[in-house]
Structures are given as structure tokens and as C-alpha cells.
Figure 1: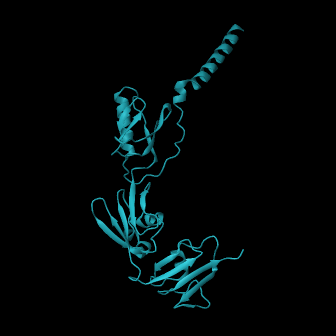
Figure 2 (figure 1 turned 90 degrees about the horizontal axis):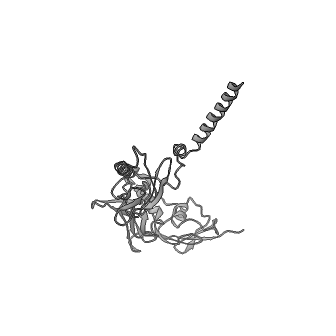
Figure 3 (figure 1 turned 135 degrees about the vertical axis):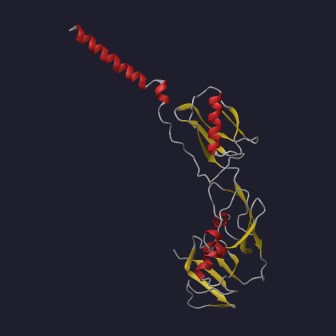
Length: 280
């Protein structure tokens, strides 16, 4: 009887010990870290730079999970490590540097360090000239030249159909819009951080143009390309506004309105396209 009671108490003690171990701080450290949020996709070979925001963590260690921004001197401030240089390193390189410093300080034996980029400030391209929204554009993934032109609002009414791309090493490349659209990957290269993209101005009279106004997002004059349909002309004018109607498109040629206009009709130099409002 006494032996049975002793065995019951021993079983309870083992159960309480197991529960205590499961809720101890050491056990909590062994739990997987929560998934990192806010990560942005990395271009191949991305190198960290001033102003980039990063999240640095060690799985299972709540005391080593912080978001910091790379300072103008190229460093970040982290727990235990304090100051460490981040610029010029890839995220993997910074992970290794942090782990090495933690081990050298005797804080961890073999830490697993995660570095995730949550915001870009150091990687950008410069878009100048006759685009609708010139300026600096951050690149947080691999962008092709055509995508950058699209992000800059497209080529403006007085812009050339040829886009100039200048690399940081001075290499200069040129591509037409048609080449970028139909020429495959070689004719629409990936841009790189520091690239300069330029669209020259072409004065009216130097090329054949058509005119478009009314309920379109970007009224103005635009170059006529071979085989351009009326549908393509509407797209070149920025597309219809919320009030625009494809059934209210009129074309004037040599001052005379054309009859029975269709969206597949070919636009000619000097044509004037008017887009009217739709009925509700």
C-alpha cells in the first residue's frame, strides 16, 4: 500500500517536472522564431547601402530581434555587438559578420543570424528627360528598362522613341520602344543601381505626329508609328478616363471628320482624335 502511494507521488513529481521544463526560459528559447514580416524581394547580388532598413534576429532569442536603419557612416547598432559595418556587404555577408562578432565576444557558441531587408534607400536609378514622371526610382528587385519607363509614367508627348541607358562604368546603350516591346530580353535589359536613363526631346515638326484630346488621361501630340491603330493611339494617350467612351471616338483628317470610324483603323500623320463622354 505504501509502495503504491510512493509510486503515485513519484509519477506526479515527474509530470510536474516535465510541465516546468516545457515552460522554462530555456525551453522557450528552443521554440522557432515567428516568421519575419515586411521582407522585400532582393535583386541578385544585392549589396547593402546607407539608408537601407534591415531586420536582424536570432531564432528563439527575443532579446536579439531588432529593426535598424544603416547609418550615414555605414554602420548599424545591434545588441551585444553594438556597432558593426553593414555597407558593402550582402545580407548573407552581414549575417556572417554578426555571427563572428557574437562568437568572438563569447555571447553565443554558434548563432544562426537572420538578416532581412525591409526597406530600400540605397538602390535606385535616375530617369531624366521626356518622361511623364522624371526623378529617382528605387529598385527593390530586377527591373527591365521597359518597366522603369512604365514606372516613370511612360514617354511624354515630346519624347523620342529611343531610350538611352548609361551604366555606372560609362557604357552607353540605346533601345527603341519597339525593340523593348518585341525584341526579347537582349533588347530590354535589366537596369542596375546607379544607371541613368534618358529620353531626348523631339521638337514638333521633326517627326509625323497625331493629336488626341478629350476624355483621355494624357492628351497631347504623339508620334505616329507604322501600323498604329486607333486603339493603340488611345493607349498612347494614356487610355480613357472614367468618363471616356470608345463609342464616342471621332477622328478628323485634313479638317474633315471621318465616317464610320473603327478602333482597328490605321492612324495617319496629322490626324486629330477626339474622345467624348459616355452616357450613364
